[in-house]
Image (spheres, helix red, strand yellow):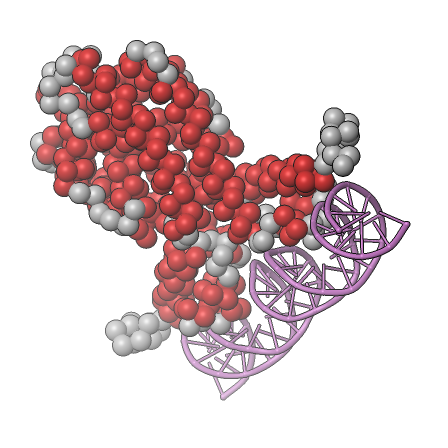
Length: 203
Length: 203
DNA sequence: TTATATAGCGAACGATCGTTCGTTCAAATT
DNA sequence: AATTTGAACGAACGATCGTTCGCTATATAA
C-alpha cells in the first residue's frame, strides 16, 4: 500500500535486512583478512559490525555458511576481470591490458590474505574447491579465446595449446603478485617487464 | 658409568626423549594436514600420538611453537631439492631432472595441504614468512646458477635474467602441481610436456 | 645408596567458542 | 485497530580450547 511513498527517505524492512546482511558480510571479510577464518569468532564479527551476537544467526545458518558465502563472492569477483578480455579491442591489446589488470588485482595484500585462506579451506572442503575452480575455469576460457586469436595473428608455429598457455600465464601473474605481497612491496617495473617478456615467449 | 652397555638394547633417556619429541612432531604434521592448524587441538595430537596431554608441553612451549617448528621443517625440506641442481651433470640435464623432481614434490597432496596452511599462517606471522622466503631464496639461487649456465650454452640473445627466469620456472611448476592436486589427479604427460616447452621458451 | 632431575600423566582452570533461546519491538498484513 | 511477522538483542548452554599443576616413576648423578 504505502510501499512507494517512503522508499526514498526510508528503506523497506526487506531492504534494511538485506543491507544489514551485506554489512555483516563486509565486516566478516575484514575480520577474516585480518585474523583468518578460524581465528575469527562470531563475536568478533558482531562487535565490529555493531550488531548483536544472536542477530548474525538471523542472517546466516552457521559460521561455515558465512565462510562459504564469502568464498563464493570472492571467487565471482574474477568475473569482472573477464571484461577486459571480452573488449572489442585488438586481441593483443586486450591481452596486455588484462595482464595489467589481473596483476593489480592479485597484488592487493587483502586479496592475497583472503585467497590463501580460502585455498586452505578448499583443501578440506570440496564444495569450496569447486566454486574456486569453476570461476577460475571461466576466466581461463575467456583468456584462452584471446590467446587463440593472438596466436593466429602471429602465425606462430609449434605454438603451445591455448589452454596450457592460459594456465601458464595466470600462474606467472599470480606468482609474481604473491611474491611481491609476501615481501611487502609492489612488483617493480623491471619485474613486470620480465613478466611480459616471458608471456611473449610462451605465446 | 653404564652408558655404553645398554645402548644397543635400550636407548638412553635423552635419546628416548628426542624420539618421543620427533614422534609428536610427525603426528602433529599428520593432524595438521588432515584438519589444518587451527582445527587441530593439542588433545587431538596427544591422543593420536598415544601421549598424554600435559606431556606435549614438556617438549614444546606452546601450540604456536609447534606450528612454527613444523613450518621450519617443511621449509628446510626444500634443501634436498637442491641436490639435483648441484649435481655434476650437464646443466641442461640437471635442470631437466630438477623439473621432474620438484614437480613430483609439489604434486603430493599432503605437501600442498601443509604448504597452503603455512602460507595462510605466513600472511600474519612475519617470522614464518621469513623462514618460508629464506629457504625459497636458497633454492632460487641454486636454480639461477644452473639457468645461467644453460643460457650460456644456448648462446641465446635477449635472454631473460636468470633470477626472473628461475622464479618463473618455479611458478610454472608449482602452478601445474597445485592445479593437479586441487582437481584430485596427477599432472598428465601432455601437461608435463607443455610445461617443459614453456620452460624452454622462457630460457 | 641416596638424592636429583625429568619424562610422563591426567585432572583441573579459566577463557572462549558456536549456537540456542526467550524476549522485545516495530513493520507489515489483515 | 488488531494481529502476525521477523529483525534485533544479549544472557545462557554445553563443549572445547590452550595451558597449568601436582603427582608418580624412573633414569642419572652424587
